[in-house]
Length: 424
Image (cartoon, one colour):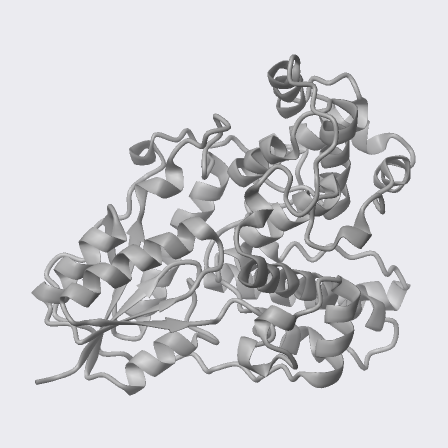
């Protein structure tokens, strides 16, 4: 009997540097690539926010469609379905005589719970669910310590892995694949099918995120060109805006690293290289912290005790904040930009969070849930990990009170232009 492997794509929507795909092709006669739009991804949360808002949903749909197109170009296709993976995949296993299922392991509780449900369903069919780890710059097995011994302090984590670990080369993208004989590969739903309204482009934004691997690779090359130009003018300020493609796995962090590293020897680019590398290391850190500590990051008290919460006015204050109507110009500008574009800089995220927590005395988890809905580059570990740190309830309690709201305002909007541009 021929061996068929079902490859379940989740937040890994690319062909390049995809060990799961490479391994499946090497060990099978044919594969069945599958992407499932899980309704839980678009459900409401207990904070009356959406798990996924319209801006990120559009990016996801674009990325899925781009993956299908890429697979078609090398002789394949992508099976697209709507529903629960733990229901759909076992049916596909039986229908297409699948011998094994591959997927990338996630770290947050909701995502890992779905994997567990699927694993249990496949166990009844005596089918193995094989886990791969492909979301980080450093592989777990290459770390100089087991997960339980990873330093809680970011600087210690960074220092030790940079000294004692290696970053592996990328896996090559396949140039040909054999897929199962499928009559109906499924249709990609529209935003309307997901009960979401498309976001009109805001003319104040000079950047547009378009989902998909090819768009991510194109933007990566634009970042490299921008680094070259910035090095010539010695303008060392560069926001790469690679995070959305990294979050959906349209770009591999190792691909970003090795491409950017080519610039390291060019004069005046080292600072920019280090800044992008720092962002990749923070992504790794929070993913590994989630593996080490579990779901403590989703609790209001986290690993400490959150500050004062004005319970009597919490809902009203939260509503003002999320609609950009607090009366504090810079904070309102940040939220307006977020609502209109799905993206704000890291310092803008910190500023909005600090104001919500300290000035409005709203529990930080409300803000984290709102960012989950709105951010185009949302991923659970980075979002909830950063919010917990800002609230002073992160796993590294030594970082409490390190965030300076007034300093952030000066750095974010020194001349008042930002607040003026994004006035709601």
